[in-house]
Length: 91
Image: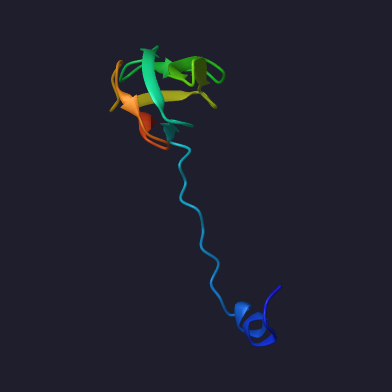
């Protein structure tokens, strides 16, 4: 619910587009990076395990969403990760 004068003005607002983050594997939650299955230059297939994060006493296996090549791995095993921190960068 908006005030009538605000509702009139909202149609003039520019829609902000979300950045394309499909080239990155991001940490979905804070946790400890316990395992990295890839290194720079590796080819990965869709569904292949890439990293394992331990958070809230659970192991979370992060998988590749598409077939691609690993460009860089800025995170290392043993790192404490924050939400949306880059773990792996893809081409």
